[in-house]
Structures are given as C-alpha cells and as structure tokens.
Length: 379
Image (cartoon, rainbow, N blue to C red):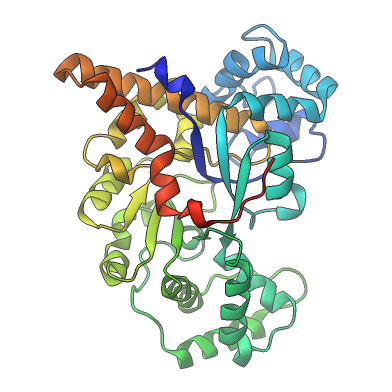
C-alpha cells in the first residue's frame, strides 16, 4: 500500500500561496519554522526535522544530491528562480489546492497563479477576520458593518469554497458559543472603530469574531479553524479543539461543516470530536512537515479513533514550495506505513486499504467542500 499511494491524487484542503519574490537565506529560514527568532550564530533552522527533510527529499528534485549542504541548496534555488517552485509543486502530485488568501496575500501567488505554477486546479478559502478588517480599513461605518460584512462574504462565496477563522490566535477557542445579539455586535464594532488609529485594523474582539462565525454558519459552508500548534502568537493551552465543544453542539444541525486544522499536539482530541459530532472533520497538516521523520507516528494517531471519512490531507504550506512537496511526500509515507501496519496486524485487504487511502487523500475533501459544484482556477 505504501507504494500504491504514489499513484493516488491528493487534495490539499488547506494551504496558502508561494512567495513570488526571490528569497535570501534569512527569509527562507524564516519560512521553514514557526518561530520568530533567528538561529544563534553557528546554527541554522535547517537543523530541524523539516530542514533535514528539505535536504533529503527536495534537493534531488532541484538536481542536487540528497543532503546537499544548506548553502549549496539555496544557491541552486537561486539559480533556478521560479523554476524551483514549479519543479517542487509539480513533483508533489497534488491535484487540487484549497488556498486561504488572508495571510500576507500581497506577497504570495493567488489561486490563479498557483494553478499556473503547479499545473493543478485551485480554489479559494476566505479568512473571516481579514474580511472584517478590510471593511474597517475601507472606512465602513460601525452601524453598517453587519450588513456590509454579510454582503462582502456572499460576494466572496460566489467563488470561494469555504472560510477560515483564526479565532485561536485572536481570542482563543474558549469563547462563548452563543450567537451574539445585533446590539452587542454594533457596540463592539463601534468600540473597535474608535480604537483604530492609522494603519491596519487588527480584530481581537470576541463578540465580533463570534458574529463572523455565526454569519458563516448561516451560509452552511465549510468553516476551517486553526487548532493547536502555531507561531508564538498563540496561547497553546487555549487552542485545544475540546474548547470548541459548546460551539460544535450549537452548530451540529446547522448544515455547516467544521474543519479542524493542524491539531498537533491535540490530534487525538480532534479524532474524538470527529467521531462524536457528525459535522466535524480534521487534519494534522501543519504538523506533518515539522515532525518530519516522526510524522509517520502522528499520522497513525489520526487513524486510531476517527472515522476514516472524517480525516483530510493538508500541507498548510506557505511561502516556499518545499513545504507543499514535503507535506505530500510525508503524508503519503505516513498513511502508507499505517495501512501496511494494520494489514500486517489484522489482515486488511489491499482493496480496503486503498479505499481508506482515497477517502483521506481526496474523496473526503471533495465531499465536504462540495467541489464537484465549485468553480476552479485551472492550470
């Protein structure tokens, strides 16, 4: 089964775009870590699981020997320019990308650009908090915010296949699950607008974020939540998916689908939620690259409790094409090893292993995001 997985397509249900500007070493290293600090002198962010995986698996795609030095790797990357990203994306074997465009969107390829670079189909996912921030930056009057947000969201959802929330970063996942009253929202937006000076509007108000979430719920769409591991901006103890239990109960019969992203180190908790709630799905996307050689065990843990029709693949790649390539490669390896182990232990037939692999690799994403009816950016 491990070998058979190479021929199964993947839908990357959560990722971002590739950086378009040339990258010097410091910028490249910044994009292969979730930390916000430079490595001490004489050390490198290549001295990590993801750094070793890049040298092992990405170097040959760029025409270098496995475990080429970081200096040689980055020099070769500069020589190839945009071709380096194209090689890595096209070798990944990802057939469709669902691209969340709300983070540093002016620095990365948009869905159409990703389609051209990867020779794959792409779809957009809208970040709720950024959509709200854009309205305030454009001068939206607080009393008009609810109507304006609903209109803007509907416009974006004419093409986008889902939405994402970064509530975990802004307010934690331990928020009140109840739908806020209109008067509460109006007052909160007015206070937010009153605090704004010049520059970007950063949304950190719980009432407003709850309103954004319930507006999305009313549209019966796929709603992604960042869960667990992230950069230093998150309070990890407030990012457990179990904190969403009240919200999951409240939205159970809404028609919305809830996608728990990344989940590490809470992948077992996410698997429990996916089992007990009919509208909950999850992945371990961000963790796959950053656990590298140990990602086999992380992926196996997702298959312990959750129904196989509730697990999805994602890379959560941003900025550098290496992360898409490794996300796909390490996912295939981890899933293949897990299925081989189940077969060795309990005699799972090869046809059944393949059926499970296809569910996780692409069928679940196609069903949950209703991609058969979605508009795409084609390569």
